[in-house]
Image 1 (cartoon, rainbow, N blue to C red):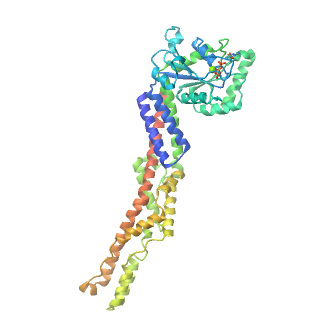
Image 2 (image 1 turned 90 degrees about the vertical axis):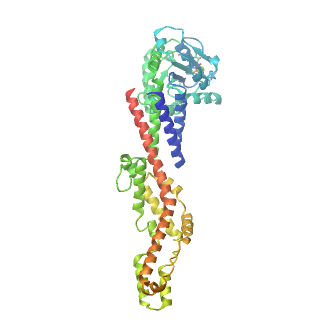
Image 3 (image 1 turned 180 degrees about the vertical axis):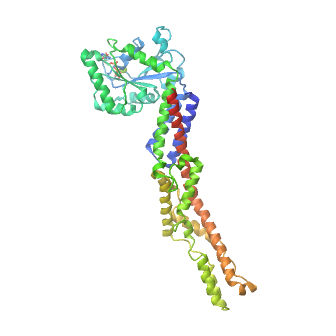
Length: 477
Ligand SMILES: Nc1nc2c(ncn2[C@@H]2O[C@H](COP(=O)(O)OP(=O)(O)OP(=O)(O)O)[C@@H](O)[C@H]2O)c(=O)[nH]1
Ligand SMILES: [Mg+2]
């Protein structure tokens, strides 16, 4: 997988995560955004180098192992814990100044291995090996340096020793970080010279078992002694493998990007369980983002066009049957002008603003429909962006005062066509009222709901697309 498509996918996923965060404050989504930022930073620095970091508790032998691997005494080893205060780097071949500067490794803490000609060293070209301060250090400065670098490492070498390997606190703290990054994790049991030969494989197996119990699937465990050199050659071979292909860093970034996209898909919720209303689950998958949102929006409208729909807000008397009844009354009133005028006023007079209770009931029905279409947190997001019943009521009231009441018929029509005129005027008034209500419902309810649906649907399409591409690339590497 090349860096440019990875960068554009990582940027897209970060944009998507940020858009989702505007709708729901979700820790997992925040994590996706942070991961993307790390990956983008790493990709922008180039993926020609493979960063391997030695991490672990103080005194496990990281610096000793570093020196054994680079075959020089460069990193400081001492009796006082913790010893290593600043990250140290060894670079095999190539220009890596920008990367090392970004990692914050001082020039005096860097060493280069270009001139060594042994076979495996040639295979290590492109490797940057880092010796880090202890991971769970009491020293805040150590922790900050380590935490800054860890997300950028393409391979983490977790160094432990026969005394510390079974410490549950260490396992819990470290392995939480490594879960899901198994392909980028190598565990080294160092100081095995402290064990009797027969015990080495027993302790190694026990460590592997503890790792599995902690959720690290198929852990790779090596045994070493920085003192006797046991396992150093094998560990170097492992590093050669990790650096052999220039895709090592890209592969790691691709894997993490894919996982971040999957986390986002999960946070977005499954339309299969919520469904797009009764009309069909899986519709989001079939139609595009806008189409899905449109379809769902239409369903919301259709679903709510029942008794409790906004159309129900148009007062009952402004309908044909009621107008007919009033008009008949006018007919019976014959030439009685006063009675006729009263009846007409009844049939064509300003509607009252629907009550707050009625509007509240409408909002509840609306949200119920949103819940049928969207996963619960997103339905809550719909709730957040809908207007309040009070606000909708105010808008309806303002709009209604702007609707002119039709003037009374005049001349002959006033006498002969009273019934027809009353009907026509009532119809026109009702149509205008419906139009105005519809526009307000559109603005205060439909449009904000559709915007949430569109965000959800677009985010899901984007995250699924990135996860899919990462999977394909993973199989291809
Ligand atoms: N017996 C034995 N002792 C070792 C081995 N590796 C390191 N040590 C000793 O363990 C102690 C700690 O080694 P370091 O390499 O400084 O450990 P570290 O993990 O870098 O420690 P910090 O820098 O404090 O995080 C030193 O006294 C080393 O000599 C080993 O393979 N066998
Ligand atoms: Mg050290």
